[in-house]
Amino acid sequence: MQKHIRWLLAEIDRWVADGVVTAEQAGRLRSRYGDTAPVVPWGLIVFATAGAVVVGLGVILLFAYNWDAIPKPGKLALIFGAIVAAHAGAIKLLAGDGWKPKLGEALSVLGTMFYGAGIWLVAQVYNIDEHYPNGFLFWALGALAMAWALRSTANGLLAAVLLVVWGTSESFGFHNPDLWSLLLLAGALLPLAWLNRSALLLAATLVAILFITITGVSIWGALGHGFTSCLAIAILLVALARSAAAAGIGFEPGVRVMEFLGLVAFVVCGYLLSFHGAVDDLLDWSRNLGPDEYAAAVFSWLLFAAALAAWGLFGWRALRLRDTKYNLEDWLLPVAAIHSYIAAVNGDRDWIELVALTMNLVLLGIAAMWMWRGCRESRLGPTVARSCLPGSSTCSTARPRAASPSSSSEASSLPRHSTTGRSSATREVSREDPFRDRRCGAAGHPARLHGGAARVDRAVRNAAHAQDRAGRSERPDARSLCPVQL
Image 1 (spheres, rainbow, N blue to C red):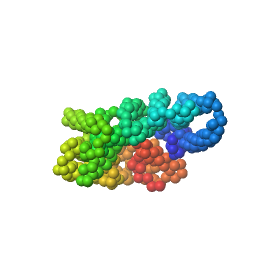
Image 2 (image 1 turned 30 degrees about the vertical axis):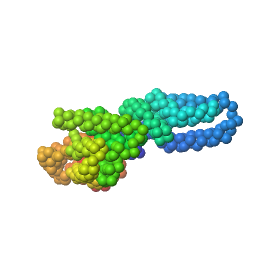
Image 3 (image 1 turned 90 degrees about the vertical axis):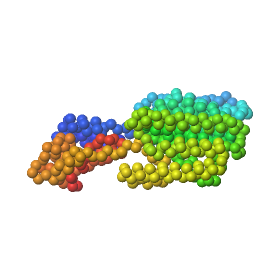
Image 4 (image 1 turned 90 degrees about the horizontal axis):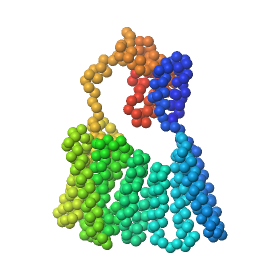
């Protein structure tokens, strides 16, 4: 809760006692401004976390210096004791209220880190010489277990990082891409991101899936297989974002994440394919083939089929339900992907020239449409941003609601400086705003505020700005009620 909101809520009781507002109006003010998140002591959390890290490093250095002198049972007791103590404290804090669950989640991550360190320490104690990527796999499985047991987003993020490390270790270290990392990311972390409504976890999981897919498919087959798989995932994410927005799934931040990542990946791929030399290198499935080019081709075709199916379902919904919102330039994405896949399979020089030309036209059309939409909505910032970073376009294409003639005439008929008395419209506004009589004279003239009345007016306007930053659509605007001269 911000400072001026706390001041406003503290002053409401004094206003009721002084007769400035009625009890009913005070209740309405409390309900409007009182629904705020509890204060999180970020200073305590940050310094406590930093202190815990420093103390933990000191303890680690102490035990590392004397590790050889500690017997094996003592080493195991230290490892498992640290894990149990960290998770026990995390569970106790997660059961509390206010800011305690946030600190408890951080402590649970610390316990998961102790668990990962314990894997390597136990291997060292008993001289276990094993396939080292399996250590990251067991660590990731432990993080996944804690993420689901505690519904912890932080543990889910740690699990995503560990699964990427495991998958890339298998791919680059042993040239053995493993689909299990993709299955764990898609089957374990995507549902958790949905349940927690965590856009951050969703973004991390999608980036991990994209990275492991590109590296694994490229090692299986050729660089062209990995590149076309990335392009297919990009248009698949955009299609899923459009379908989710049209269905109203109630996870708008997640929809924006899918749209942003998909558009960014497509723009990067399209920019690379706008050069003839890059097209020749990136869309050649027969160059530098890996150990299993058939698996790479099948995987790439499956992603392409899934992307086209998603766009087909969205197009069918758009034709069936006329109120489905979409951007016209969205349909350029599957067209560009089809051209790219044909060029990758065909390998003809004429198709390569056509793909480069198509990608230049597609990027030009998308940028032009985004800039036109920003200009139509009279927003300079989005217009410039979309011309430079097109991946930040919004999911909805709803046009700004135009003012009706009746509302315009009613607005123009309201007197701004009445000299004969307050009209009925002015009296109606005064019932909604208990502070109008203190800001305006008896006849509705602008009045200069002094002392407590000025502070009241500033508090109302600051609270309105605070709700505006919080994204609330309805709020009182003290400046529109009467012209106030401060």
